[in-house]
Amino acid sequence: MRSAPLARLCDALDVMFDACAHFPEPSASTFFARSMRIALADAAANPDLLTAAQREGSVEKYRRHLLAADPHGRYAIAALVWLPQQASPVHAHHTWCGYAVVDGTLSETVFEWNGAQHCASATRTQARKPGAVSFVRGGRGGIHQLGNRSEAAAVSLHIYGVAGAQIATHVNDIVRTANVPALA
Image (tube, rainbow, N blue to C red):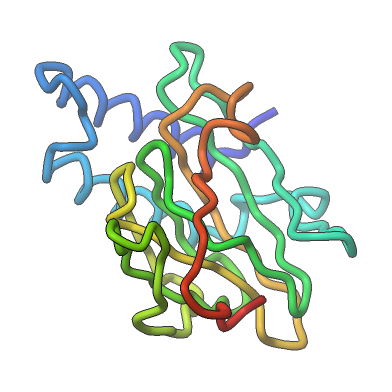
């Protein structure tokens, strides 16, 4: 059963897709990107968004909880739980992606793709505190690595432009790095 905040987020996404129906790719619309950031921020700020079970981590690696999947395959919503010192691989996205930090602080290292050398180089690292929101379109223009450098768990809310069944296989585009990433 969906929480009321999650149901409102799904409703907001449906409205966004309807408003961008005339675009071949809705995420190319400035309206879509802006609306996604607003919807993520609103949902992440609501303390009733996630259940206790959806805030549980795993000692092996960050844990992904699928919260909702659009019946038309347009998006999947997940909560990612990051225990201390856990990090994603350095990756771009095969699809658009938006995320918001719900609890704790994440560290995000942003990378730049070098097509000639076929690798990515770190350009900056920033702390991402509760309420921080990001949206990127698919492709290697949005390469990053998220991780938890703190001693407390962190939780983030992610929305991907894939069907729920594809969330583990069609989102991340793992890339080679020119140097050792900050959160390896």
